[in-house]
Amino acid sequence: MNLWIFIHAVVDHVINFCFSFFYDDSKRTQIPTVKESFLMESAVSLAERIRNKEVSAEVVVQGFIDRIREVNPLINSVVDERYEQALREARDADDFLACTTLSAAELKLQKPFLGVPFTTKDSTAVKGLRHTLGLISRRNIKGVEDADVVVLLKKAGGILVAVTNIPEYNLWVETRNNVYGQTLNPYNTTRTVGGSSGGEASLIATSGSPMGIGTDIGGSIRMPAFYCGIFGHKPTTGSLTPTKGLTKRTGLEGNTMVTAGPLCRYAQDLLPFLQVLLGNNISRLQLDAEVCLKDIQFFYMEESGELRSSSICEELQHTLRRAVFHFQDLSRSPVQKVRFSEMRYSFKLWRYWMTREPFDLAVELADGKGAVSVWKELPKKLLGQSDFTFATIMNLINRVILPQENAEWAESTTERLRSEIVEKLGDNGVLLYPSHPFPAVYHYSSILRPYNFGYWAIFNVLKLPVTQVPMGLSKDGLPLGIQVVAAPYNDHLCITVAKELQKAFGGWVPPFPV
Ligand SMILES: *[C@@H]1O[C@H](CO)[C@@H](O)[C@H](O)[C@H]1NC(C)=O
Ligand SMILES: *[C@@H]1O[C@H](CO)[C@@H](O)[C@H](O)[C@H]1NC(C)=O
Image (cartoon, rainbow, N blue to C red; front, top):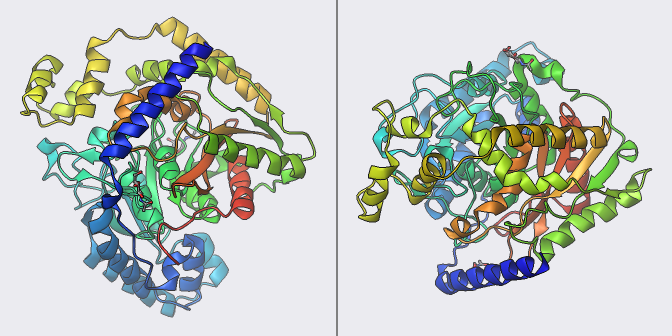
């Protein structure tokens, strides 16, 4: 086993070395500083200042539009926009504020994000904007109606400004497709932004948007949030946030690992943003509960134990330990190291549960015209004639050709692991868990280390709530962070801990000089 870990470490070094050779210093791109100080503010602070008429919604929306125009050529995040309508809606919000008789408190309750701009992914339907899913066959397709989560955020007063880039059909750990190309990491453009909410995370990290709606079926909120150094929350899974309009879902599919959730730069935005996305299900979570950090029982795990994934690099081990030490001082009960041995099956379990998702990849890729045959597409790809990315072909091979996991084993292991963790965490427990073995990796290198993705995917399998928390930058200037996990419906614990970590370690560090 030690030999295996050693060989893996050597391979990881070789991969990093080869890629660093390819991506040299000449690719340096610096994101320019913001021109308006309000671009640095949290969404709740912007909402408050708009409500109090200290700044107009129009000025704020215009400021973010100008920022997008400035940064998008450098990171390639935004794929379609509605700037004109957004400015009109901002003026309407300002007019409404000028004549409303509602008090600031009532306004906050009814329209918590009045006048605040937001963005979402290409795969989340928005009326009149591109809804390509990154597929060439859909390159001209536009959304016909807003996804339910978009409706909810608009009802809360939010103003949709743009939609952002994703991997093909949302199914890859890098944001790249043949319609819009590749999105770049603002901390270092030689690195990936992750997927699938990669356009969102990179745009938010560069202050091109104060808040974005992500979706997460295997890490799609937490991975880009980690790679781009912002906060992301994957809520408890189980139809709490509506799925209608997400990646062509009708909302009637039943069991799925997917859930929508917030992406933002500041921990204080998570809770009010999540409240909006929950709609009628708000009472299912205890988001208003007073939590005392002293009473939380902290647990941590240093690695998944999955032998096929890389070891956690030193800097990220250290990041987790800093959080552990912090809560060691703060909590009444000592922080406990735990071991859930079946976490080592993270990747296999997710792979199994993906086959139970209510969609057939081959059919979806053909977009209503039969099904894509992997046997035809693979040779076409090798001859450079395929419309699909290599990642998608790999996904098809994985789904159609490779042997599948044993259902009985996967289901009983999932059940066992879930009960073990839920029992341990109880109603006041939080698990600190690594986000990934490395900070943002080089473009294309993930394909050589697919199993590392298990660090995110296991929590979709287990349906647990998780917050991704940024914890400063590495010596190479790349975001570090950890995942904060709780038992089902205890999202408020994750968010409370995220706020404390922001206070202690600084949270989001802008990828531009300030
Ligand atoms: C980005 O990464 C490359 C390759 O590791 C490195 O040479 C370069 O200095 C980095 N750029 C910045 C701005 O840190
Ligand atoms: C959430 O709300 C929707 C629509 O109001 C409902 O269909 C769904 O069952 C609710 N989910 C839960 C977990 O209560």
